[in-house]
Length: 138
Image (cartoon, rainbow, N blue to C red; front, side, top):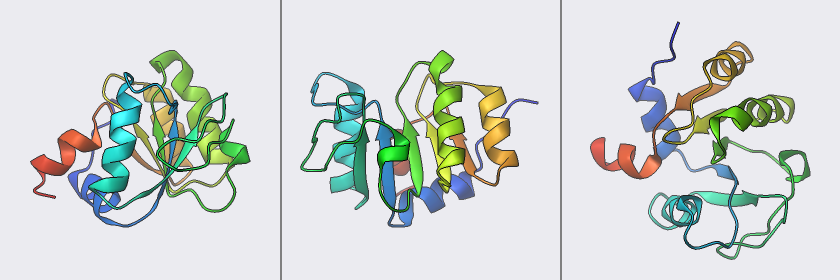
């Protein structure tokens, strides 16, 4: 069965202050993750934790090479990787005890979404906070 995003979950994730681990976030200003991470921080008031193999500081936030390297609680894992790589990131999110996974626009992995939901994580897939927040009047 195909995953369907729950508007109440989307609203809760976008309006509850939290810590978002943004997987795929680097200093590359031409990448979508760069602008969306800034939007999460500046417009939605979220704390961001960049996760990228280079572990770069981005938007003043310390970068980490993997989700397992991020200290403390992760409320949402925001996934900016190709769909074929998303399942591994979702499995890592489950392993670190994240509260939710948000697979960005164009990132679709039905099996990974089902695993995350079965593990108790909230799941949003194939959409973007910068699209959803205005649509919900946030």
